[in-house]
Amino acid sequence: MTFSYEDFKVGDVAELSSHTFSKDEIIEFAGRYDPQPFHLSEAGGEASPFGGLVASGWNTCSAMMGILVRDMLADSTSRGSPGLDNIRWLRPVRVNDSVRLTVRVLSKRVSASKPDRGIVGTRWEAYNQNGELVLTVDSSAIFGLRHPENTQ
Image 1 (spheres, rainbow, N blue to C red):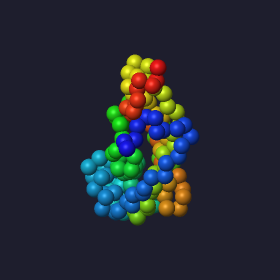
Image 2 (cartoon, one colour):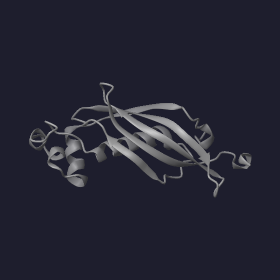
Image 3 (cartoon, rainbow, N blue to C red):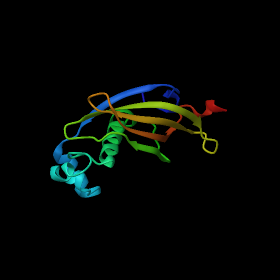
Image 4 (tube, one colour):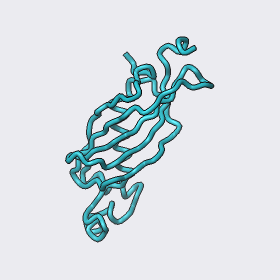
């Protein structure tokens, strides 16, 4: 069965999988998208307030998006997103950190202008292997309704 708008309940919490950040991945991502010294080399990281090589926050967001798609959106009626809000990088993600994603459903509503779809508000919470919160993102996503005729 395909996951759709009706399957979301406000207050639900989904524990999704994790991603482990390798040194090579951190440096490669930074070289392409966020070439700051503390993302590019151990020496650059050691010379920074981080005291070592750390992943770009965008690398962390991208990895969490991959988890979200593979674990939740791949077999769903997802129709994209109008955007993300309140991205917070709370702790650095370091080499060999394993970060898992939790998604909390905060809100949902059927679209007034397009009643065949609904908007689901969620908060992503990413935790490292020590249970420390490293990232939060507030997100809205659009999902098709399984039975749009029942929303009247």
